[in-house]
Length: 476
Ligand code: ADP
Image 1 (tube, rainbow, N blue to C red):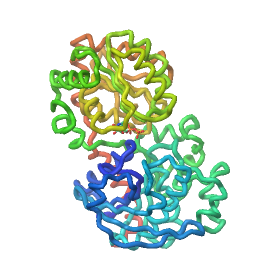
Image 2 (spheres, rainbow, N blue to C red):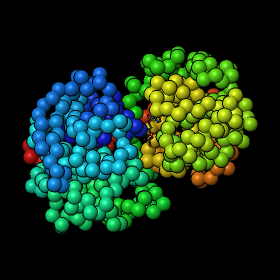
Image 3 (cartoon, protein in one colour):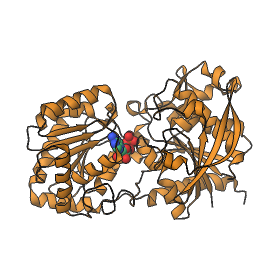
Image 4 (cartoon, rainbow, N blue to C red):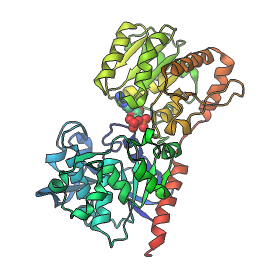
């Protein structure tokens, strides 16, 4: 079986800031379950990882990692969970901090981690065929594998989960943080900076991204965040594989966080809604349609559009709950909209898994009018909890949500095409009309109940990519 080493900066259940953690916490299991590949995962050992996990880790060895002229110690830990072996790299200087990202030296922290992945390879007791690295934080590991191990049979796959975050370093970091000869500068450089994502796109054997539509979009300047020309150069090796979710974990019948478990019963969903309304101090009435958003509060997620039309939409007999943290601008504006409409809207400025589950279980509609969306998992989770997604037709949202058509009765959600606040408002109004028309609502619910996004097809697609690389030089 092909041996794959996943490298990433976050992973459920240990540490999560967004969808990347969900993917790294579920795709390896899907690959292992169907005997498609033998997968292990390497992660940084952040202080932020709960002690209950840290206490279960086993120290294996330590080794030296050079970051420019400095030598750091990397301590290798292992932990087995749910059939997967995880490696953790500990270094207090870089990872003993609050939170996960957002430090002035984030670039350097992941230069270290990427370097540690490559230098640690011989110590893992795992002769990987493929290094599968995810997002900019591990992009340099792909570059280092190519540069340091040219004779090795190790192949590399790099997955772009979000092209907006590229991991930029000043160009003089090349001398300060890397021990590479000048000939490698061009592979790392982009527009006057060192760019971890570009380095991975340049060096990887195969590049994937998380939906077919996003794989098309990032070749265009509007979506590429400046990387379209390098992606054009590599387009023969670029493909889009849609993400799945762990259906056992996101399961309204088994979810321990929610008030009442259910399969598809609207009555039980209403009970969840009423419990949440009571908890949040909103008027308790299961018949009032509830719209929610659970998200990082950033421009990507379309909050500029929502900000424009929410006061107006709140004139209707509806309730809105937003759970999220992020840019001050949005934290501030949505808190104020909630204060102005306190009997109809509640703002939860938190990152809170339990609250997220309660909201998914309670709501009728999930708001995700993203400006761009590589795949998006939240709309898949919403569908799993029988909550109707309202999305803009971009990236993975376009690939997973079909607009409801009252004539044909087809479609599992609502969508609009242009990044325009009035288009959003008119689709919100349409969603409300459908909610109040019981025969249309029934048809929509039938389609929602049939929507399911497991990993099984996509895991096979990844296996084919791994095979295309390893069978070229099969050593067995
Ligand atoms: P992204 O990775 O761009 O943030 P995704 O939709 O792919 O967006 O994944 C977001 C994940 O993070 C989902 O599992 C969602 O439920 C979760 N999430 C986002 N914001 C919060 C929050 N404030 N509290 C709890 N979970 C959250």
